Length: 182
Image (tube, rainbow, N blue to C red; front, side, top):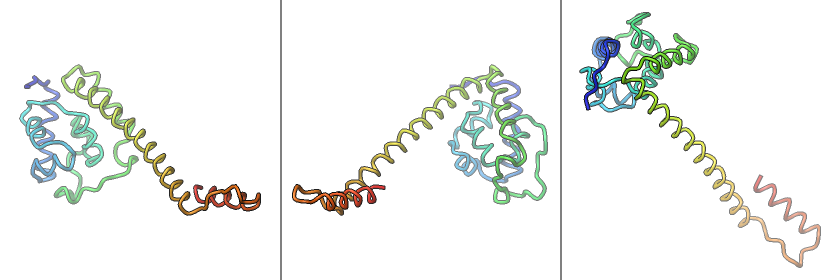
């Protein structure tokens, strides 16, 4: 599927090509793996056949934050002092270089652009949201399973209350069970 991309998209593709080949001096395959996308997708972007995805934009922000503004807008510094290859680039904190609020403004600009990128970005944001919600549910299930397993191991360790136990023995057993389960 070949989608006509805008001149803005062309400019971003050109900057991305300069970034990968001249600034980072790495192969497209390495760059794609680091960002978390396929080599064929990077190749299609650089050939101006595809637009940017949310995964690419997020990957650029996470791994190459200091270049992010230049890559998307052409503004700011293109080459960081002393950066000779990808190995010299350090991932910063959210407060470094570009603020997260700026990232959101740029994302909003892409969404409002009406380009092929905006539809792709919307779909990817929805998929990311769904994945995060699924992960939250899985963490809840894992937590409950952990409690069940802990309770099961406590049942094996702490003696059961028998009818013949007196009140003091029952209280002791209950306290041990509560302590074991936490």
